[in-house]
Length: 196
Ligand code: SF4
Image 1 (tube, rainbow, N blue to C red):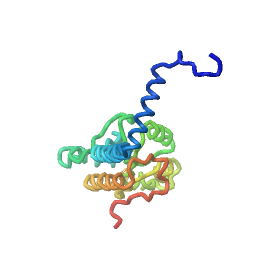
Image 2 (image 1 turned 45 degrees about the vertical axis):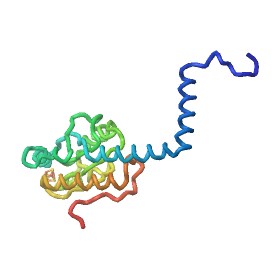
Image 3 (image 1 turned 30 degrees about the horizontal axis):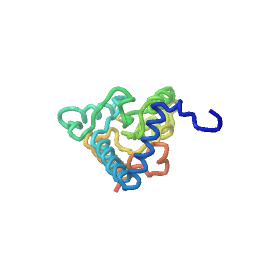
Image 4 (image 1 turned 135 degrees about the horizontal axis):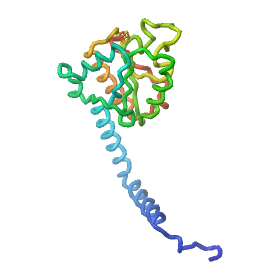
């Protein structure tokens, strides 16, 4: 066929594209697309903040407070905080101890394996600044030197209530900024628990 359309290549992909374009135009014309986008965005925002999945990662003594927060007395699950052991199923990196320079690469790899949008909480002085190991030859001066942190929870160690409060403040942040990927919010001020 010279110069004209080759209708023999009209296949299922072309059909799907054509139907998609027609549906898209119809939804745009009726403002339905905008409505679905707004409702869908609000629904996913609600679902994400009500079911935060922190990575089950224990580094040092603060991890015992994390374990206590997940135990029956404090029961973080009643607030929708559910610890998972695979980074691919998690949206919160909870760092709860000093990061040695040797562990810096593995923790960044774990962070990169987590799907967006994802969040980071630095729990305790070690994760915030190195704590008792500040300016030590083998400890990072805070996890924020390798991963962007959204919430800082000071203390040595912080209590489980402070950790649960940190998740609450993270929820407020998710309501405020929505599902913005971590690379697109570098200038967003982090939350410091206890700072009024
Ligand atoms: S902040 Fe204190 S309690 Fe937490 S890991 Fe460091 S030394 Fe241990």
